[in-house]
Image (tube, rainbow, N blue to C red; front, top):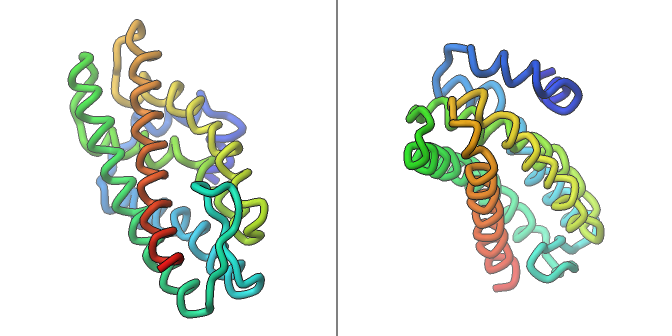
Length: 188
């Protein structure tokens, strides 16, 4: 339901998220564990069925065997969870430098929930030839970051554009790093 509300009623949902008392474990178990699994499961099934895996780095596909498809899926899942924590750290550090509230859990909320379009779009990996389209859908996350950062981190309004830009760059870089690691595994 949270993902649906973030996509359809983001302003109200960010207000709710900002006021929730929670911890990193709850965010990971209740939201991230299932959401971060969408892409790896889809890519693994797609790799097994079509014997190839989509790659954002080549904007095409890479041939993949059964064992490699499963290994890549497991590695991608772990890297998604670790990468999201790295994004939360980046949000926290960037926010602190512009006068936003320094709070790692609040930053994790923005990273996790702002990435909802990316998590959902990663289902495109089920069909390797159209997987790169997921990045286009996932870009809606930039809008969610722009709405969530001021609400959750109490960032100054005049710094939201820069904060959103830097957060989005960090998110894209992490996606590219994860993709490069997975592609390296699949190609070797």
